Length: 244
Image (cartoon, rainbow, N blue to C red; front, side, top):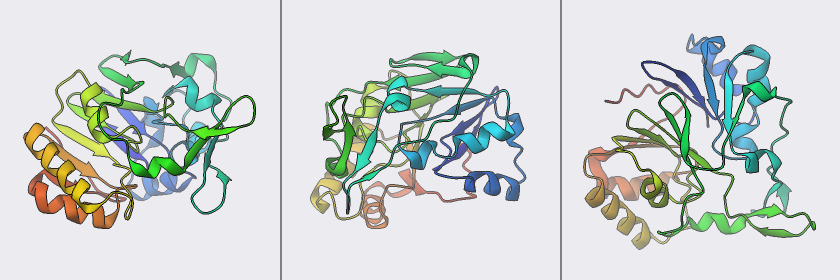
């Protein structure tokens, strides 16, 4: 997952994927990454932050927005066999780090949504995700390291490990567009729960457009699309989304 967000004032790279692939894609799309002002890292997993050191070789000025819990955490998945999904963080000068663990305006017009309350159900795919504590024990990840980003009516969810509805409920600003993964994963949530979620999103946020990819399964998308219709869109590498 890596998305370039262009507003009237900023160019923000939303996550960096797991490798240098986003750099090659940017070259193919004739995007100059040296002009990026901010990098927003949604959480500590390596498929979202693993490419950061490649970016830092290209861009010497952009500030990095991230949770300190993402940098300090040790993350693991038990899908299949136990394996690390932690990020190997590059050295970043303190003046370039904008670390936050609470909801706030981290830069002019850019808001981080942090420590998202669990009002609504959490994605069932989270049950395979763990953190390692100071005693070396594996405990279920509570995703305190996850941030969402808000700017000019657009809400970026990253993977939405905290739950899409929880993230939207935690955002105190009006949202016209949601971009990112839903972390629903094919085969995890029963179809009736997906249908109920789609109905709630359509009914509670009738004016909001949802753009999703990455960890939203293909079958999940089809089930929700049948209910949400033109409110729900998919995106892939190279997609250009123009919002309000």
